[in-house]
Amino acid sequence: MTVENIINDIKKGNISPIYFLYGDEPYFIDQLSDYIENNILTEAEKGFNQMVLYGRDVNMAEIISNARRFPMMAERQVIIVKEAQDLARTFDQLESYIENLQLTTTLVFNYKYKKPDKRKTIFKKLAKASVFFESKALYENQVPNWINIYVKSNGFLIEPKASQMLVEFLGTALSKIVNELNKLFIVLPKGTTISPDAIEENIGISKDFNNFELRKAIGVKNVVKANQIITYFSQNPRNNPTVMTISLLNSFFTQLLQYHALPNKNNPKAVAIALRVNPFFVSDYTSAGSNYPMRKVSQIIGLLRDADVKSKGVGARDLPQVDLLKELLFKIMH
Image (cartoon, rainbow, N blue to C red; front, side, top):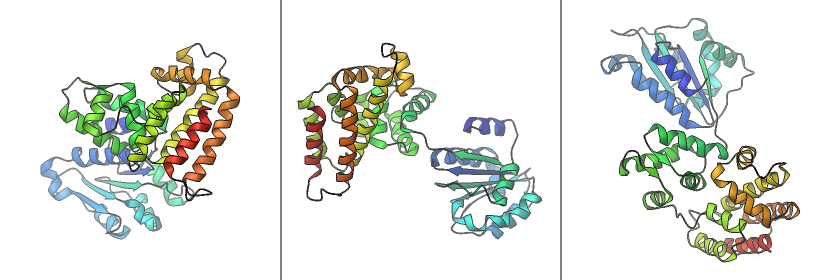
């Protein structure tokens, strides 16, 4: 089930006695948990019938005892257990409750950053008795599209380069991305198309000196621009870690290797689908493909792997990160 499916069911009154929300992406878990917390009971009902517990502060016996209570002056009560992964070793105690559910209780477990051992009997029973939702982390190439959907749902649009800047600066953690986007929603007029300039002015990500622009400069073999960006990175190391730069370059050249293997490179739409990129960026691969033949790309991927090891202090402890990147750029572009 998707987040939207679960929320729509709740809106229709199809409320499960247990919601077990788990996985590596906390954003979707929080989204569902917050919706349940804010919408199942009225404000008047919440005082006696809603409680939020934390796994590190309670034990499973206390949770079960509270879950067995009847609601007061309401049709149901809601119990939300946050950080439920701290109770992982005692979930077996929940079996007796599952076998005799209190149907006037909605019990929500937020089990973050890990997966339950589904081989265990308790989790097999939970999967049958509850809304058993896995919150999967998005792959990097999925995040820009998710950003587009989120931005549109809030009455805005966003340029492809702007969404790419967010991903490259903030990574794939959706909560961080949402926090920054929500700041933009406050300062920009409704209906605005969020541009790279807006990202730079309000979030502080440079529109000219970032990994996206570095990748583009390398693709067209603009040595001067590439070195300017590397110099900027060396002056702002906290926001531009070398490990991240090497990782993103590796992703780019891995995709470029896939590009060379495509049977139809003249169809931008087909290329975008095959590489899982926005059609806006296909021209970057076309340019880079003409400058870096397949054999050279294979060599570059090897160089990037070596640089990644060195950036982590193996075999190059005394080499400054900026020198490591400059040496890498020289080898890539010559």
